[in-house]
Amino acid sequence: MILEKVPFPDDPTPTDAPPSYDTLPPNPGSSTFSLDGKVNPYLQSYPQSPEASGSAESSTTPISPRGRPKGSKSWFPFGQAARTAREVKATVQGLIRDLVKLENPSSMAILQSCSEACAAHGLELSSILQEKTIEGHTPLYWAIIKRPPEPPTAHDRDVLTSMLALAEPLSSTTLSEIRLACLVASDQTLFQRLRRSPAFAPLSGSDQMILEASVPPDDVVVEDVPGDEGAFAVHFRFVKFQTRMRVSKEVKIEYIARGRIWSLSFFVNGSRTWRSGKTLEKGAWVACMALLEHSPPTWIDSRLIIDDPRCSTNSPFTRMPQPEFSPPTSPRGQFKPTISLRMKSGTEQLSPPSAAHWPPSEILVPLQESLMGNSLQYE
Image (cartoon, rainbow, N blue to C red; front, side, top):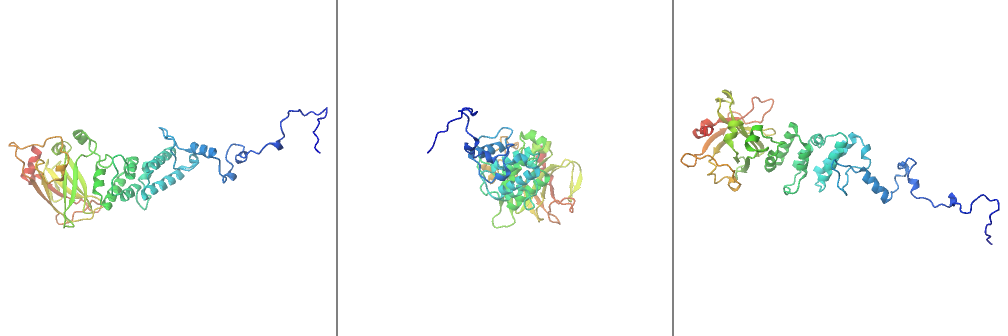
């Protein structure tokens, strides 16, 4: 039998007193946090509630100076602010290695997170991208080697393009690595594309004034001769060639052909000199052919042909947009005769520059060896 408790007359306990602590329901979340508000390290193995995990993610998401858009995520783990610069650098190097190893549609977001993390810890992403940390080479080298054969669309940026933008300014060692990678991949198209970037092939100040551009606008097309493993033809077109020769004193192109990197330049000789077996008069316009680094030595017998641009019907540039300026014409309006100069290696093979081989190996031909070639500088 249950009897209702009757309070004593002198009982000090009020009738509306709160329940005792023994009767309160347990708080499931109170045991997961210590008194100072930090997560108890011994209870981190338990899953947190969606609210708790969501707040933790938002509090550690790196924020760019312009603000990160809502819904984006960081590629760095929780507690980034407490990580040392050495740990962040190791993480960035690992992420970049994965990017060049396997194609990732989130490459832009990953590189952006790497850039923000480096900036927050006093690191330079441009230096990390130029360090030889992947099998003895830079990430840029492997990005070229692993580049897909199909180029990206005009509205898309591949990993290489994004890395190059973040790696500027490029050191001479990095430029050498880029040339080597293009040579190994035999990617003349990419090599010419890089040549049109200020970081890879900057124009001189005078050329920038003449051309009203910051990158070389000259065109280069290489064609292998069918049936001959060593022969090739190079079609090139210089914009405002004569004006640049008179003002800047030099015009130069580089290209990849038959497993080598070649250089063809035209320069104005400053003083009467003896160079590479040739006597060069002061003020002479000279054509120079040379091999660049990473190229094996070779014998070469070639012919430099300069056509009137109006009659180059067999040139691949006939399908390209023609320059806005009009080429000079002869007094009678006739096509100018073709200029032909032989460029042939001498008693030794043509070799790339090296400390052990000085003066550099090169083939020099003054344009004055051809009557029409000599007239170019006086038109």
